[in-house]
Amino acid sequence: MAAYGKPWWEAFHYYIKKNLEHVINSHNNIPIICRWNFHSRNVWISRCIYYFFYPKFDKLLDARVWIEATLMAFYTLSFGWGAIVLIGSHADFKENCLRTAVIVPIIDMSMAVFNGMVCFCILGNMAHAYNVHITEVINAGMATGMVAYITALSSFPVPQLWSVLFLVSMLCTDIDAQLLPLEMIMQLLGDVFPSVKSGYRIKALIVVSSLMFLLALPTCTGSGGYLFLWLDWYSGAWLGPIVAFVEVFVVSWIYGLDRFSDDVYLMIGKPIPGILRFGLAFVSPIVVSVIFFTSLVEYVPPKYGSYSYPTLARILGWLLVAIIMMPIVGQAVYIVKKTEGPFWKEIVGLLKPLNTWGPHEEAHGAKYQAKKSKYCNRTFQDLFYYNVFGKYRQSSAMNVVLAQEMDNLKT
Image 1 (cartoon, rainbow, N blue to C red):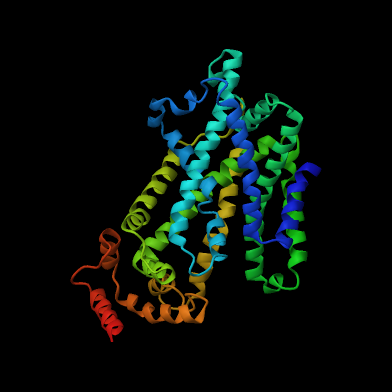
Image 2 (image 1 turned 90 degrees about the horizontal axis):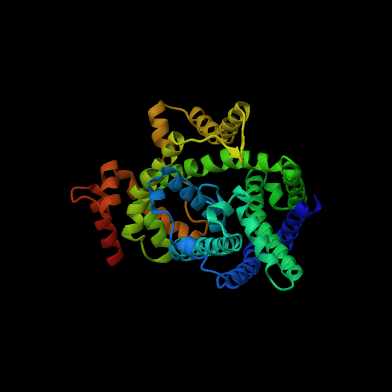
């Protein structure tokens, strides 16, 4: 219990004392250094890296492989869980968000490949030592990585020292993992209860940290592994793709990539590239939809080793998914019922940005509000044509508005 509570206390302490960005940056280096040492130590012992770069290519025809790979991307990049929006809210208005959107996935993919190399180096050496195939070594399920690192530590000189360093790196990773969910909850509480942002912030932090610590304590019991896998199987695997699809669809086809491109231009001085526009409008929604529906078709009940979860656990799992999604659906229904007028006009009106939507700074807000009215004349055909070609149709009324803007700039 004390070991589990340490990351929560450290997260609470650093959250108060230091800047969120500085804490994450300072804690990222230690795990990378430790993993590099593990890799350097094990890569020369045998040709174990062969198992990593020469996979079974027939597995690429298995839909489950693509599903798991996509879900791993959702986990590592936090698609659909609010962390990216949260971090973006801390950035400066003129921050080059386009550059960050390109660099972060590249770094994430590189780190994923590197971590895979480290694990396969160690597992390959274990297979070499026992003179068995690597598939006979990988039998620890979701604990494979932990088993691999512990095995690597035992082969180092002075393993006690490396064990301490490994625990420190795990602690740093845990602190980083706790900070973003903690910040998301605090942001939510601050928006609903403004007093939390001022005088009651420390008290709210104590209550939230303590509550999350207590709620997660059952995962430290003897049956904690079963509970953790059950929670991860249902709450983690389904919600990210659903929310990510809604976000991409709303930005691309309701808010509009033409408007979104203008917003990016206002921030960094250039629009989004064509490949990114096409990916947001077509590739991302299609890929996420295919993965989601394939997951439904290829659904496999959770198993922990040889233990199969009973029917009641599966029913409760789907009920958990419904409960977590309920606030989104409930909020939408509440807003529609709250709005007066014909139902279809209510929907059309609610799909438009609010009058208060725009940059917070007055200088940037004035520029945004001056251009906002031109999208009232945009049709769905205009938006579809723009999402495909990056410009409006020749017969579109939007071209007249753009020409007037150019004339105003010249004068």
